[in-house]
Structure formats: structure tokens, C-alpha cells
Figure: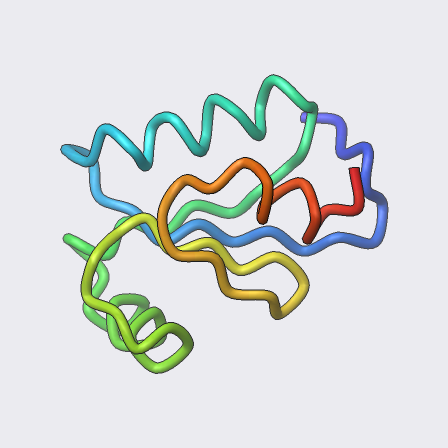
Length: 83
């Protein structure tokens, strides 16, 4: 996938059954933003990393260049991406 933000690092911590996780990923795809998706339901190490970064057990948690966004918040996502 082409990444319009060449220097951006976008990580999504999600689960397969989370509807908001799918919305976040669809939103980023619609903007041609590449991301790394970690399934915290299956990857305990990434689940612990997510909690350490966010203090939250809920998903989605999005890490955009070190800015942590909890949930699907378009305004915060766009601000973090600079779009």
C-alpha cells in the first residue's frame, strides 16, 4: 500500500471482532496511509505493549509517530497525521 506520509509510523492495536478497529483501518486505507496492525487477542506481547503505551485494555489503540489515540477519533487521527 502506498503511504502518503513517507515518514509516518502508524500502528494499530486491534482485535478481529472489534467494529471500531475495522473502521479505523478502513479510514486509513481510504487515505492511502500504510499501517501495521497487531491482533492483541492473539499476541500477548503486543497486548502488553498496548497497555503500557495507552494505559487502556480496550481497542482500538492507534500509535501515530508516538501520539497515542484511543478509539476511532477522526479529528485526532488527522491531526496526528498532519492531514
